[in-house]
Amino acid sequence: MGARIVDRAFVLDLLNDLVATNSVNPDVGNGPGESALSNLLLERLSVVTDLEVRQQHVTGDRSNVVAVLRGSGGGRSLMLNGHMDTVGVEGMSIEPFRPVVRDGFIHGRGTCDMKSAIAAMIGAAKSLAGSESKLRGDLILSFVVDEEHMSLGITKLVEEYKADAAIVGEPTEMRIATAHKGFVWIEVETKGRAAHGSVPEKGVDAIVHAAKIVTRLNELQDKLRAHRHPLLGPPKIHTSTIQGGTHWSIVPDRCVLRLERRTVPGETTALVMKEIEELLDSIRLEDSNFKGEARKIFERPPLEISPNEPIVQTLQQTITEAIGTDQSPVGVPYWTDGAILSHSASIPTCLFGPGDISVAHSPDEYVDAEDVLQAADIYRNIAQKFCA
Ligand SMILES: [Zn+2]
Image 1 (tube, rainbow, N blue to C red):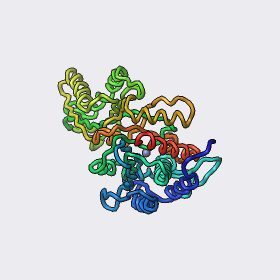
Image 2: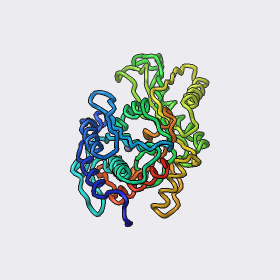
Image 3: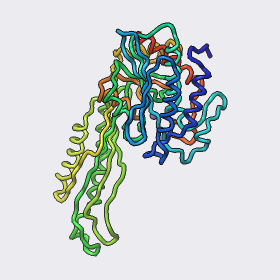
Image 4: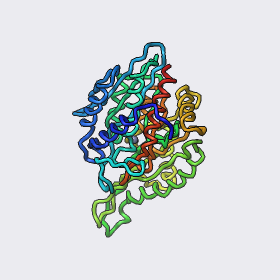
């Protein structure tokens, strides 16, 4: 491994302390939340010369942490973003909050998703803050609460902060990711007519009606294959939950089916709802007793950034220089706060971070220490190029 620019010991010690600080999301894993971690980050960032550091209150005792390295003026600003919360620790096969290093890998909850990116970003900022070559544009570090649940932190952040581009440090295996899917949660309620089980022909079975919807989802999925996205593949739909019926001897008069539709860039919620309406119409045509109504419960947009955006080109070049092989952009399978930065705040946003998402929420979460250090160098170099 080559010589590192950033302070190796500083980044690894900081990562150790971040992982040792339990920040399990209260709504995902019944955890204490981010408040201890937010305070720790405030304290550690405050001792870095030249950084303007503050907490931004979000809700209850939950606060984002924002640190700005002011540029000398006239350059582009860059935001490096990460989330402080993690998923729960139930079923973990390792000690979640006592990080251990084995064969160059650091194990613990949040090592991969995504405390290593946070440590790497701070290492990058510290090395720039202490350097001669001052940036012209601002470098903004933003560490937010609640990404794993309702994205309350990023939603609050974008009310106050803007940048010319952003990088979210989600685990991308050191690749640049320029797209991910969005999703729409849909509830479909079917209505029937209750009747006694001894005379079911007098009733209309709402569960049977919901089943008709379920059996047509395969057809819909086949149609969706035509909307394939080059980096993300086809949009997807699946059933989530079904609830209906009250008693053994009563024909159910109501059933609620929940569906999740994963959207690719370019697909709107209106389009998704229209597909479901058409599916319900096709059942109505065949069965005049069918009563079903669909409603949107929740939605999150997809993320896509053009390969021609300066942040994508500069980041791609920076990673390629560091890693040696040509680093073309990839798509990732999971949703991120990047979609809010890009949609709500119109900040050109891509993803780059150490770690492999497949171990992120798993019983043994880990990250390659050398990747963390290399990511720190890359965050530093991209800031130097982009904010020059
Ligand atoms: Zn994450």
